Image (cartoon, rainbow, N blue to C red; front, side, top):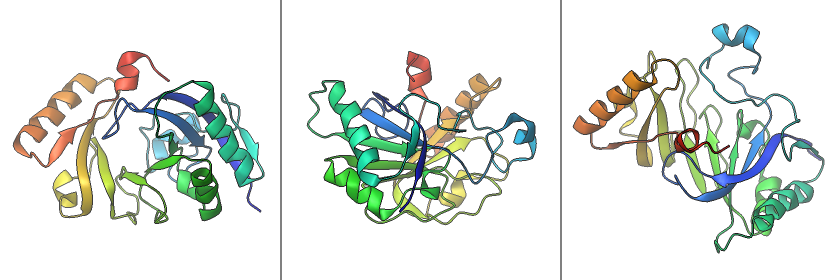
Length: 214
């Protein structure tokens, strides 16, 4: 029996990529295989620009869940508590790296609870086929195992990552997202300029930050 370590579970609007603006319950798993989440070793991490707290289980709705049913019921309850009229309950599994913990029994329990499942992964681990929507965000210097899915979303720019190297992969949607930080304005301009001359790629913005959403 698996124990699932969850940083937080909360209701909001998806802020990035194809489903931007869609109501969702975010299920954020603890832990990542590209960074510990601790500031003292950020500089030497494989992914050193992460803007998410995925350490521990102390966030809203977070904790350790010892059964798939308990976790799936928590996600569904948070959806139902928001009195949404959306007929398609939607959950986004993220992290950290959710595929370190997500397994087929939990996917089954979430589906049994009536939830459509999307995942946001760094692509270093292969995703189970049963997931409804797979968004891959590759990182420089990291192994790239999940080479197909519904959308690929590259944080741009990254040294040693060229979007052109990904255009032939089996994804339905291709997004570039400006890297946040002190160079956000310039990075956004660079993303727009790239997409203008490479129309296979579309701009993804972190609209939840713009709107002040969690």
